[in-house]
Length: 265
Ligand code: SF4
Image (cartoon, rainbow, N blue to C red; front, side, top):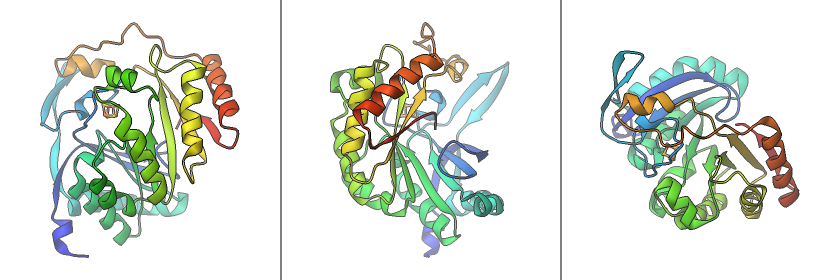
């Protein structure tokens, strides 16, 4: 592969090893900085801006964001190659939104394949078609969020309408090796059986999609908002109970009997 690809630079804010929730096997998660959306429940608010920021947590201030080359990043990830090989794992690009840095993302994915490492991305799918054409062919597992079928509600809670996302889901399904649909279950946003069932029906309509994952809302990122000088606007929300999640799972199964519906990633 051309050296130019290994020299591409991009911006990340974290690398987490030994994940078992973001694609098959044991995976190293590479968190890219920058996102097109502004989901009100986002547990990584420090990911949203592309700018390098300072974040204060527990009285300690740290810099969020660093620029790296594809070569530096893939060499770091490849340290765990033995775990990837034994578990069927690999790397997962998360964020933020990896499609917001398409050249860098394409470079990481191609380098991973050159190293014999499988690739996954976690994405909103909110990107121009040419970005999808550039990135998706180098992805083994696409994990894509569909957060709501109603355009107005989607825009009110994420800052963007959903029409491009839904159209892109159909397109990604047509070109991806593997596509799983995931839905963060957020109280007062999409936590009714009708809303979840509508997303499951859409997921079932996508060619090749066999799984829909329901990810319960949590507040783990709440303190980060104050840490970067922002307000967390959802502190009144209570995470859904196990029985509420089971009720939504049953609604999804009824709406899309051919899909495997799973609670959690
Ligand atoms: S798409 Fe993901 S990273 Fe972007 S704002 Fe929403 S939850 Fe956060």
